Image 1 (cartoon, helix red, strand yellow):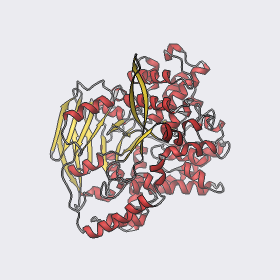
Image 2 (tube, helix red, strand yellow):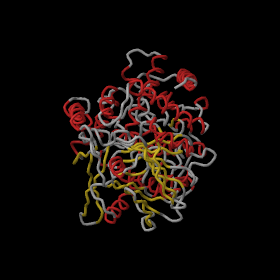
Image 3 (cartoon, one colour):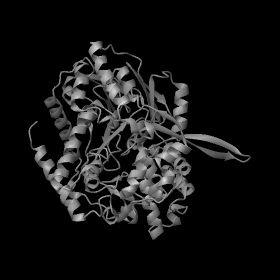
Image 4 (cartoon, helix red, strand yellow):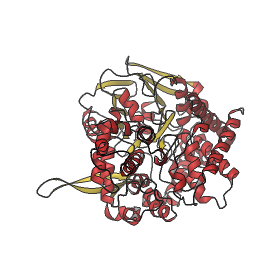
Length: 584
């Protein structure tokens, strides 16, 4: 609910008619906030019978039940009908958006319709404006952000979302850039922006909220702050960041390399978190309301003219980007990875999908399924300059091949072959963890097919002895528990800080009156709503077909047995069917 209010404040924007309304929804309070409220709003507004990019499909944003009030509660959720997987789309971004929506007085935003011409929105408290974006159409994300920063007021109190050419040209894995270094990355939200002629959104929060019972609130705040900054729970995220995982994952044989033909990269030392820190790291940044500073900015030099003319380019990096645009493509230097990341960012693609799609294309090229007639330039592992050109071709839909490639590896392999080595789960490209059954099942059954849904990869690493039933129970438990974390919306890096007691302490000092049983009920309500949406969109785990490659290349726990993997997915499916039939 809106803090200290008994309702959820929802802003509705229709781009076709330019009609705006605000509704105070008491009925949404039972979903707490964040992913709960967004799921219910998506269920209400989605049009299952229409294509995901039909103008009548909604884009939902929601902030959490304690956004920006306590440390590391920083994220905004977007929910939509994914053009990549053709089912539930759910994506999270940090930056300043949650803070600005909170201080503009909105818990959630529902955007429908299509503007007649390219538009960007400015959202303030009681003031929504539709601005002409024709001059911005075709520009990269960086230029778009720069121009909007110069045109719009609210510096320090605003957040700027924008898409690049990939979103404008409806790539199924186009992302939405948030405040330069954060993104709604996965599942194609950028394409929905493009389909609505929506180039950008500026949210400006210039109100304030008076904290009641400040003494009790501040006591809890300090306890959480201390856990975040003075214990080891989040230390690694500030030190090397998630790139600290490169060497350990490589060592245990879980580091996908060259389109997952290998589980180990011989040049891992060259692209490790330690190497990035030594060679390229220049700055660490944080989302608003976070004291950690996990956003690692690296710098590389680029020659832009003859006569020793160089520019310094700053790019954010982390483990997923190093895997997807590094080892997965055989790229073995930090500078080359940063250069490719920068191009992917500018065009507005999801980095993980881009790397995995290019990995499939490279192997297809090698096997002769596609030729220079398709790719224009040869695609070979390690050739970063050609990958940069390929990213540009995809963003521009330069020819039929690149247009289809921009729809994802599943659709590209349907057209050109190579489905066995198009490494995706239900249409979403694989994250960088080939750890065992936990990762395979976790990605497959996860609501959004992400490693962040239930951390199956982590279960693989912590389970001492493989046990089928235990694995299924652990994945289910984590998937459901994260519905609570994502209703607040806590950055998942802080998931060990915010146990249930801490969550209750925090919420109950800012006007809520919840018990542990209440949290469990809310988690069930949210998870079941997401499952209902997936069912509405005809998603069925029984229809899943996994790529053969994941069974051919050994994981950290050895070769994965195909029959057992499907048996586990079937077990999870039966558990879900029984779960959906239980009363709340």
